[in-house]
Length: 415
Image (cartoon, rainbow, N blue to C red; front, side, top):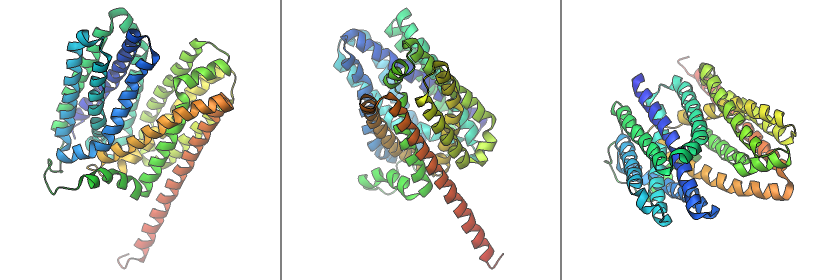
């Protein structure tokens, strides 16, 4: 595909990332200010998560009916039309929380169906030997925009109000729709546009799950993602705040410092992976294992540490290790799946990870209350270490496969 097409995809991906942060913060703060209830404010992310979960199950059925390009663009158009309608009628329904929740559910469904398609575009657009570079550039941009979004959205809401800020989110989504439409125009699809032999609904739904289970490498990478999703709960805001107060003995300002340090490290890590993308591309599994192992050790050190400045340094150091693991893992996943099957596999994978992450958030709170906050980070480091162990298993599988192929070539009468 032409280089310019990836540029349009990159703009669309960046716009979606920033728009998501702005949309989340605007509606969460608005619902809290209107109701004065943390429970009501929590309904927004809760409904969003439930709708995406349900959409993940039904996504394969939707994908079976339309071609990749048509469905991708149509879902984004549906999303932006819903968001535009919400912006137009927002002044009239702002006091009706249940109507807001209906819009939240509908928009979340379009995201739940559309996100696996958007995630699947990279290997369709980029040559296999440039996947790491593409994933690294997307990661750096996404992390940077998330920092900017979380940092400045609150200020914009206070300065200009909820309505103008929501309009900004809507304009960003419109930009993403235009750029995605331009990007997919030059994509050459081999799949039929909803034609061919009809499959039973249950068979369509379970295709992605069977794909995840039957391919050993894919199965192990998915298990790694699930374990790391469970470990990721240690960075939930409430857990970090308790750690800052009880272990570091600092105020809420240091909560912000910790988060900022982690994002700075993530951006630095993204730039590093971009710099050494050729090396990572040739050593995907080894880089995945190394990144997980280092990230595990740094997390353990962080959990046992009581010095505030050291905590900031460790957070920054975690960024390169995390990005090395994440970019290598993402690329290995994309490389292990056929392009046409990738959206369904992503939909199944997202269901598993979101479920595990939700459960682990509750488990982390329980561990913190019963065993102490340090045990949360120790448990997280153990999970990441187990994930690193699985990556070494993938490395062993690769070596065995190479050995088998070499033996077959030696035994061949043509050799």
